[in-house]
Amino acid sequence: MVKRLLSIVALGLFWDGVFAQTVEPELFGPGIISGPVADAAPAFSPDGQTVYFHRSGVAMHGTILVSRRQAGEWSRPEVAAFSGQWQDIEPAMSPNGNYLIFSSNRPVAAGGKVLDGMWNSQRYPGGGGNLWRVDRVGAEWGEPRRLPDLINSDSSVFSPAVTADGSLYFMKPVRDTGRFHLYRSTYRNGEYQTPEAVPFGAADSVSDVDAAVAADESFVVFSSRRAPAKAMELFIVFRNNGIWGEPRPLGAEVNRGSYSIESRLSPDGRTLYFSSVWVPKPAVFGEAGSAKRALEHSEWETGLLNIWSVPLAGWTKF
Image (tube, rainbow, N blue to C red; front, side, top):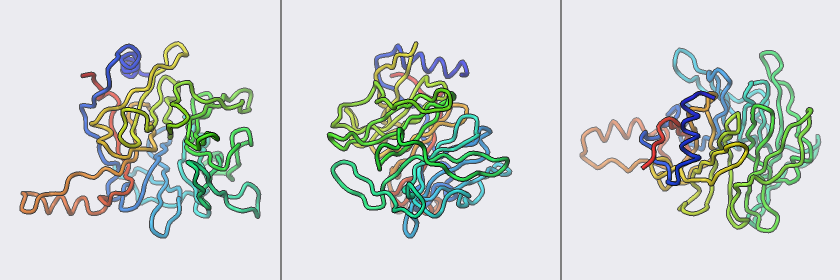
């Protein structure tokens, strides 16, 4: 990985404080990708010119959309070729771009029932998920294939992340408490190995969700309610010589005291994307420029999930 990112990794390994962010997050594709309904989980092609993400809202269950960057602008999103019938969410691109893994409530077998979800002692009819893989076939996508039962051992398996060697991170609920935890399955000789809970996981009574994993597994960004989080907030953890450190909050400048989930990384690992319900303070009546700001924000400022980005190289210590 690039030298600058390695220096950031070293900072995370050897500094005992918390991270501060000197660059404010920016809204991703306002009015095009981030809009009035919920948008999350951007998965980029290796060249960064195509993005898959999921959208849900009024009259739309979770659907994976695709947008392409043309002449410096993102195109109007369209339904991805492999999505649109079932609730499909949380796409994750393999680093080489050859396949994409996503979560779906689609039936395990043709003609079966959609999956119900169950976590935090609550049942969610039709809200379950298993992980499915769709492979690139030339310029198109093939047919999605459900990952093996070893991975899909629950009806609530979500939020995949793929490493350079094909290993897979995902989340599923812990049986004792129903809280979500993060798991990793090594990919070896074309097969997934028995998943194991990540060593930096919180207590079973605390949820960890939505891992964004560096291709070389040098660091992971994820969301958690662990202390000192006030809501579901973003944390980062680094690995050195195969040993994971202690997760640290990304700081108030990123989390902004708001619900922040579905973290993702840019193809080069330098930019963090995440979804948040944060909205800026309303403009003061009579304030200069308030009408202009209100017009610019009217297409996305609804309090639902929007996608934000922040450069990793902007991290500094207090």
